[in-house]
Image 1 (cartoon, rainbow, N blue to C red):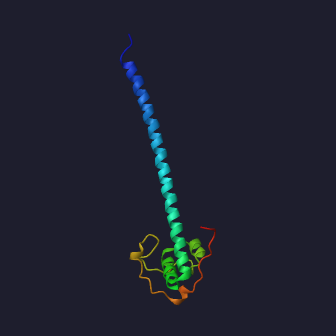
Image 2 (cartoon, rainbow, N blue to C red):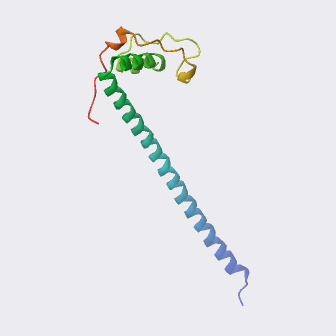
Image 3 (cartoon, rainbow, N blue to C red):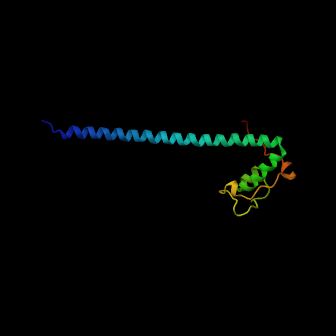
Length: 127
């Protein structure tokens, strides 16, 4: 007669294998969802930027406000060059910076004429 422990051992082994397969499926699905969330966030940023640039092209006051916000928020040299911002680093108070929320940044001045007359950055590609 066979021992009753042997079939349990085989059954337990099979269940552990199924558990590992499910764990792998869960990891793959979590990874897929994370990747999709990153893609969605990038798409939202692209769309919001396109709308902002379109508005800035038609509304000088909005253009000035946008450029003032960009002056405060954009600090990387290559990004400042891309956006047509003056100088390599913005002159901003300590409370402002790349991680600081705009609500804590220095107040934006009313739209001035020089920023309103700035050309918009070149568009690269289609939407």
